[in-house]
Length: 143
Image (cartoon, one colour):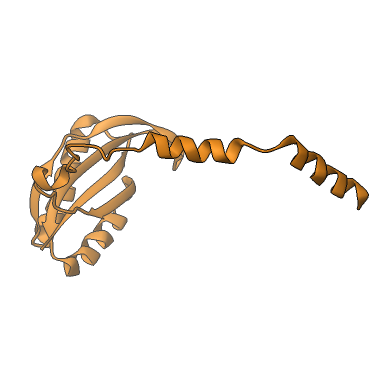
């Protein structure tokens, strides 16, 4: 079984009570496919950035579950059959690494920088004789 997360938009024409029962219907789809629900959150009513099926508001719901990859196709067919779902997205949820592995180890001491060496290099590059510039200009103008 793989961990998944589903996020979907439900039509705003439904009342809050109907949205809760609809969410129960979606979670039952997962259970029918022998999936395991991990975490479910209450749907929130949101204003959409752009209209979807002529609706400016929708309920945003999401939950996490575990399911066999073979059963995912059947779950998607059931979701597509529901006309109250405006959009949905199913993601494979990667397990988090332990915190110790996620934190990047910092260097205790920065590498020393030799300022004298850098300063000498910069001064060497900056010094250009005025006579050299005049010679180059004359060569360019003669051509």
